[in-house]
Image (cartoon, rainbow, N blue to C red):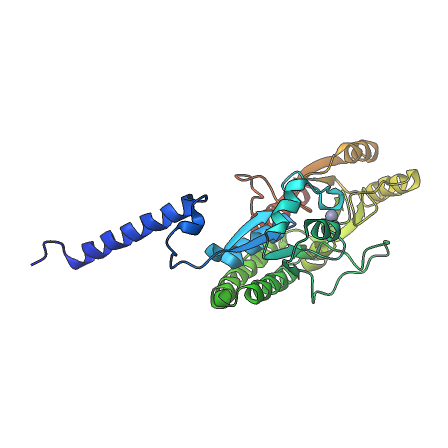
Length: 314
Ligand SMILES: [Zn+2]
């Protein structure tokens, strides 16, 4: 007769199995000699933007290992790839890019790395807002509309499934669960703006990154400090004067700066127009771990909260 009740026996067996898995995971050097484990090999994913890194982790769960190229201090429009990016790409199974010329430096990087990774473009199938700027097929900042974010998540689930068919059920299930959270986020954003009258929703940001957000939340984009969908640009003297005039004419109180972009021009323009420089928005990047913009959902909610707070008092 066994003295160990069956439930406890199971816990012990599982515990030993878990220890064995940990041992395999830690033992990189002797990896090839290790006993084959029952857990599937993780799909190696390299993602350019921080939004895509978050989406890939949400959809891939523990079946993927995500390496990010851009961090909280890296403006995608001005990014200069490093040798470690090329190394990560050389070993990747899947590469996630935004597309629409946001991360166009990836082309050269992939070619130099000799990567054979499956390339997934997140903006595929999304109707881009028009821009007349050279090189851009449309405004690349699609993720600022929750409906577009859901489409990006679906594209990622499809791309991961193509690279790893055994994971398909998991990817689709994770994508469905995450899209429900995105619906919840959209609802919270609507509730945040609901008390703000239409004539106070006057947005001025550093660069033209919030076109989709403006459309989705019914805001009024008065202007941008950099007259471009890229941060890699400068306003002319005439453009600065026109912006100052628009701020005065529409009695705009706040100019929003952006994470990862120098704010000195915003300060000058705010001083000249009699406005204030307000909270830093998450335009192209997410925040540091532990910040209020750590995840995509956190960042979008933080942006909405910052705008509504500035306009509620205006
Ligand atoms: Zn941008």
